[in-house]
Length: 373
Image (cartoon, rainbow, N blue to C red; front, side):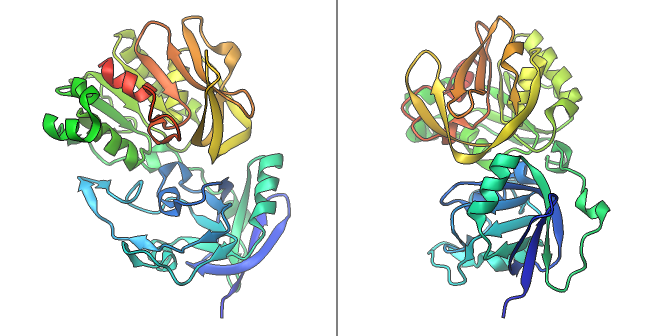
């Protein structure tokens, strides 16, 4: 028999459901994701650190959880990080009987092992509409029998890149040229012998795997680390949690890198940091981009692409310097979802281009970044 549980929002609304996973209360900002599959990737995405994640697809847990295999030092083959990142999970229905040849445990067992509190059996569509229309709000999941959260718990500290970054510098050697060519074709050969500093603000491991595939040597550095004395050809700034305006140390380092004319690419939070280093202003989105179906249009064309985003901030378009240009615009709200410098190798995108539907047939911004190293 399942315990009852309640999701309480800061506006006073409550949703009644059933507890699964860890049965202790948790608090955090309540956000949503619209993907039909991929709960493993979403739950291990560092950008969701400290939040309560609502999945809009009505079923979760049906394909279980695979083994935790490392592809390289501290790089997971199956997940986006080495641990579950949100504090809570909200679902419409939980499937107790999973079926997948790679699965080694149930979603609930994994949640219990890692201390993730869950609630299911609520109207996730109504919750998502509320979050979409009223904006981000905090909330608590309170399983039956647990003590109600106090004010200090409801105002739990928001996650920052320092909470999810790597502990020390990690170097990943370049893959052999033959292996890279077999995986990617001749265009990947240009990256051989190049070194990229990856500023880990909460990097998804699929991004590291994508850089592996290009043939570069990756130097992964902790957030806040002064990498400017290292030997490198370009800088990739990852996505992650937190307010970009507070990442002043990294912004100053990016100004130095761009002043030297070295290639720079920023993704998600990293995009905001590149924009701030370029002199742009960033501002909160009225309706955050938290979905797997954000449509963006490539400027100068009528082509649209579907992107996955988890963004609470955007670049103020009236602050974009004259020597920069917006290259992808969000078709829902007109936000500047990607920018590039008109003459220098500086780029940024709200989304991860390597995982966007329909972008495989194009030279993406990350491809251009690699070719400009």
